[in-house]
Length: 541
Image (tube, rainbow, N blue to C red; front, side, top):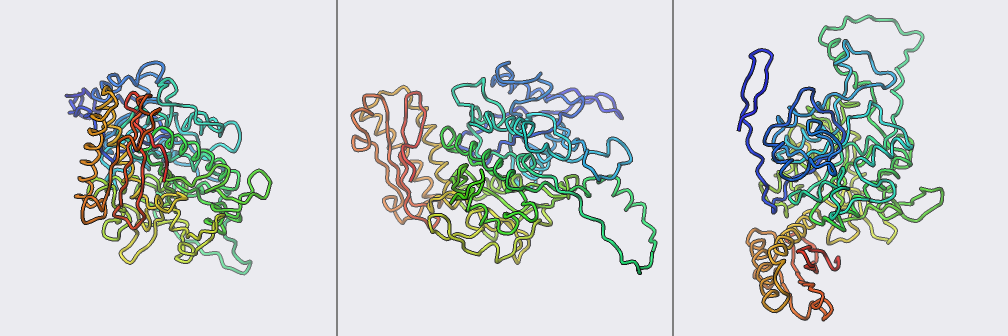
């Protein structure tokens, strides 16, 4: 398939465009990025992308908020950085910050978008495919202050914010922002790179250094290169967003809504989110883990729990937080040259899934190398990473056990931990949760294939056979621990797992027990196959 394009220097040219291939639903490396970015002027989506959007129904009026050429509020499949760069003007965020130096021309007085930097890092780290949902053009630097404008911006990412996640799988008309994942069964990771910026407080620029009165004035001639670099990078003098208590409250509320939606409707999907940088002088700046775990004083009262387990609790197997922020070759145009780390982590997890298996930790020393990342900020010391702190239940954890941290190792910058925020130790290693997601995803596919079968001994035997085959494959791949299948897993689907009411209602429940290769206790998952092939977890253990 070819697209006709116009190049000013050479005239009309034909560009080969590969068709959008429907992904294998069992893939575990595909990410969904939702955020703010502009469409490139004059850019047209490739014919293959337009055909896919139309065939999947994404361009129907009840789903899309704009014309097809605007690529607004629809999931655009992207299989390379060049495709994204051709469609989206990711370096077109206007700058209005006080104190930013004037650029030589209007085109140069623009900043990079956090969404664009995240997608770039995803592909740089080894990601192969993602979907991009553009919810609006980027707001100017800095982000809107707390209030209705901020809430409206976050609601474009998370429909229904700040009250509830208002979208549901059965209502395509409400699929906006992150809710598009309900129509994308091959997605494993969701990133909201603009969320930390949306809730941040723009700190004032640093005070200029003052010389003592006795100091002599010394004039040094600047080179043309230095002058040009200053003109082309007005964001260097703009501080990256920091979070105070209200910002962290808004951030936690948004992530809590997203995690709740995943827990109810999309259990195979992981939310990868950056922890905002704390504002200097706030409790989080002095002790980030202590602030996340508690005490929680939002709302004015001395509550006993923190952001992990408080009113908008982030203690979830579906949430993977990452910190600190990063400097990459693509972050120069961002405020302070700092990039939100969620895109880098999503790319690293995608590479890990493709090369080693998603059920293995992405933080092992020989596979956690980072391409394109050359610095971190703020610096997190070894003592800060590993200092144990008791939570409200009296259990001691350190920052590296609750947040996926980037940092320095003897071999250079690495991902040091690969963890979720779950309160359950079994689901704390992110690789274990991803293994569970593989099983749930396969069970959903099995349920779809058996939708029209009547419940009975024959169907139950087919379910047992299908799940046993999957677990045998995982055992052979090294995802499970045990010398024999009986030691590694067990599958039950018979009258002992269902009541008569379940059978009369056409509900099929299968109990799956497995020992992950990671050093955690045996995990039991109860999967319910409901009418229509929908799979859900009966219990979480």
